[in-house]
Length: 228
Image 1 (cartoon, rainbow, N blue to C red):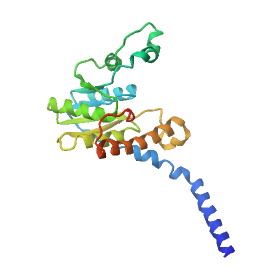
Image 2 (image 1 turned 30 degrees about the vertical axis):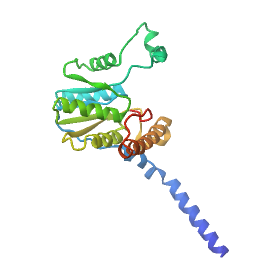
Image 3 (image 1 turned 60 degrees about the horizontal axis):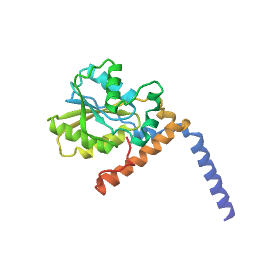
Image 4 (image 1 turned 180 degrees about the horizontal axis):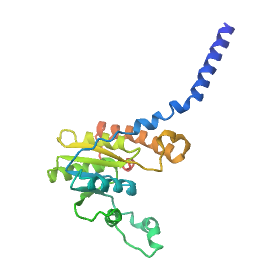
């Protein structure tokens, strides 16, 4: 009996050692699951989701210039809380810049990438989450009779964004294509080496589960947890 336990322990140690030694061949899988292959086609508009402004807007302009769509739609985030406005705008204020709205920042970002305001549209309702963005974009699409869109978002966010948009747009007949704006700060193949990758991946898994449960099972709408 004792010999069997020793043998079992040796086997367990051996398997655990193999598991550790071969980590490079399987540890990338949690990040790999979050990556989505681009599915790009000509559409009525390019939708740029909030946050990660540099990479997302740059990619949107590339798609626009390549002729994939004649319109770009951007969601509007609320202006920062009044009592913390100085804190959020500190970087601008120390250079003598004040009262810069989110819309102005977005338009300036497009201008930086040589895209004029022509054909750039903003959603009417303010958004505070990916779910809010899907609702706002759906309203915009239906109001303007748009039938297709290219969803542009960042490396780890594409899986969740595409899932949420497809559920929100269910039965609308609107086609959703997707294109990832790769964020060079992240390295999915070696995500365990940087804290920012680890934090982002964990956050995305939690957010995916939360979105499905909160928005599509419990049918709740607003929440401050579900971030961009």
